[in-house]
Image 1 (cartoon, rainbow, N blue to C red):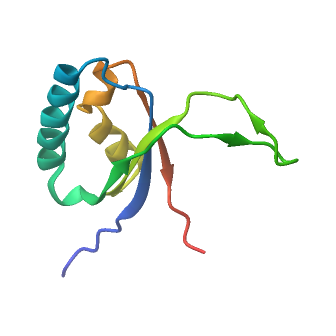
Image 2: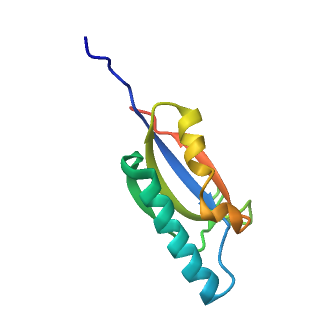
Amino acid sequence: MPKFVFVFVFVFVFRGGTPDSPEAGRKLTDDWNTWLTDMGDAVADSGAAVGVSTFVDSKGNEVSAGDPVSGYMVVEAVDLQVATAHTKASPILSLGGSIEIAPVVQM
């Protein structure tokens, strides 16, 4: 009898980890592409880098808060533990960045 494996979708939100030179940027790009390839079919959407973000409070005022987002990616995994394991080889971590992982909630 076939076994069913449920797959969940997670958003990886990258913060920081910005290269400080063109050479570091090229290395990050090369390492990033290797990381994506190594994750294979788990990558549902390779996402994108994003520009400098702006924080807005409940009154509509721009405020300074936290470490701005530097990019995102969508990953499929059987659970949070597997999703987290995929982050271990992320090149953004070697540049001092961090990765926030959140499950996508079906509405």
